[in-house]
Image: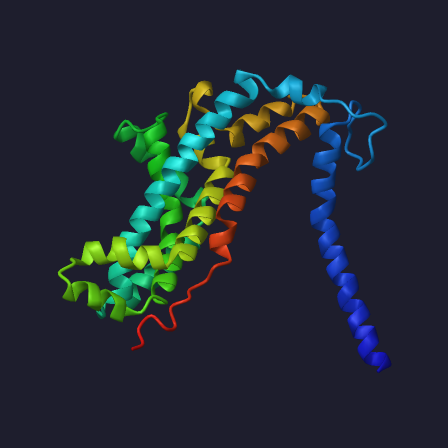
Length: 274
């Protein structure tokens, strides 16, 4: 019994340490955003102020970069989800000797470091006149997230019984119609997972827009946050924390918006009975 209690105490201690590693940075951001004398210390401010938010809520610092981020990440996410669904459907529904090699190639592509392919991508974008364009960055965002999105989408699609599609085919539906009207509506939680994962990965990506975009007016918030770090190491921590709170808000709202679907699961057990 004593040994069991010791192991349980050790496990609880380890979980508390891990939780503190996540909670302390979050606490610093929230407390420093309203602290007039914020620094790197996690502390309760002596007084609460909104001056840090007033200082960063300008078109140049916040509104334009956030709009750029929404355009880039929203467009990239929409393109990723559509292409992933179209690619995952034949992999899930049709058997071929090429399925396994293709899936292994996708799995390999997810492990490629983004820094290893940026130099040839940059040279290619210069050749095709996509450098310093929003659409070019959207295309690359989608291409970089597509392998893992296809893998996820295919696994979720496997959970939808094929008998439901066969019933739709009997009524005269095409494969595309069965995908859009039967499969995708039934795998709503899976689409939500792919959407949130793709958007979050794009939203926090600094390196890709930093390399592919040259005009300061087109930079997203993930890049513009670098402007808070001065050339000589001087940082206004309160404004940095306030910008971080604003920068995190769209991702939180997206997650809250799809939270119900994420917890839904597939209730298809009785759909093919009778």
